[in-house]
Length: 213
Image (tube, rainbow, N blue to C red; front, side, top):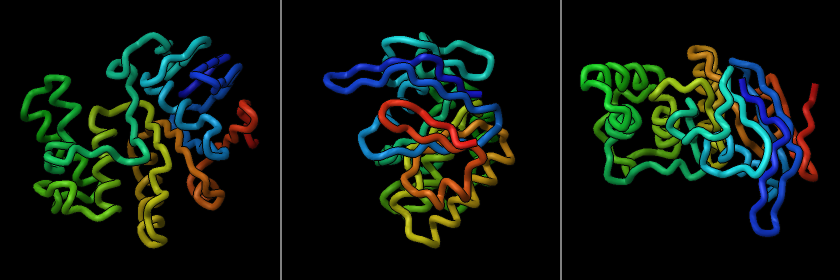
């Protein structure tokens, strides 16, 4: 579950005030709105990457407002994917687990699970510059899912893909949501993408979130 309660964020001349959003556990939500309206800012706040000035962020049954990113149980795929250029796919998938000091056997087992879930078995030893756009997006998704987050935040994850890869990734995101039960909040500009993927639709307009019922 994701709940934003009376959120205010100020930065320079930009301001969001009184933001309210609730997405039930295990649901797939899409957040739409024009460029620059604050969609990415809200995702970053949920992840703990941007400070809020007022309000509460509830994830599951926990108030995470003042917790650091690593303790929030959130996976995040930024728009540029942000893969590490010198790390293999295997190392990318293991990254969050190494940070959490898991044992090597547990890390290897989880990497294998992710590779199977996302179709990365044949790519584990490749570097990012040897991956296609769709492959790189699957790696970014795997890295975000590695520590089994309860919430997954996706910032326009399909915007740079051609039509065939776009459909393939839509199927994969539906599969991941169904298999893992992770609560997903996905930013997109595409109405057709929103209709295809989401059971819950939100629009950020003039600093307020509107929920399509």
